[in-house]
Image 1 (spheres, rainbow, N blue to C red):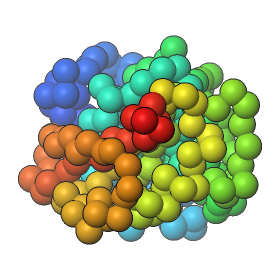
Image 2 (tube, helix red, strand yellow):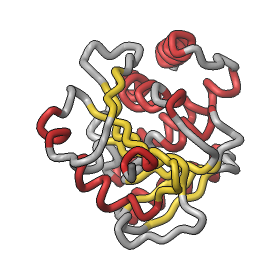
Image 3 (cartoon, helix red, strand yellow):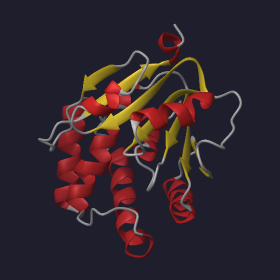
Length: 209
């Protein structure tokens, strides 16, 4: 695990985040859980722990500066990404992790318990039928759906002046052309990843004029 520790420490430092030993150890424990459960639950196609550190953990944490408000919804969380790493680094925020796959939400619930994260809740539900009052300040999707579907299915959960953050690889030109409301793309650098990464940000106040 020494190689993973070094990768994580270096990456966190590059992102300007705390490299406290307890945080690094918690993230590495999360990676170990993913690897263990992946054998039977097929949580991710990535099998190598070092790749998980870069492609899952650091990729998730790269969007931390763009979170808004105190209630965050992670749609299609899968193995708890990006919600669990973000919750560790934003302990004053409340995170709700949503997925329609029961096996994956069972894993996430177990991870929350084992990592002792008190600011995270997980729900097994489809976003279009999920209800929450008072709603969320920021809603995140990571490889969940097209931008248009993301907007249509989740807007009822977004507070006034809230924002949607869609994590993407290359600039999604065709998807953006289908959006009939203002959007902004933000280039994101993920340590260890040479490929292009970006966030598409849609703010509700701007959407509604």
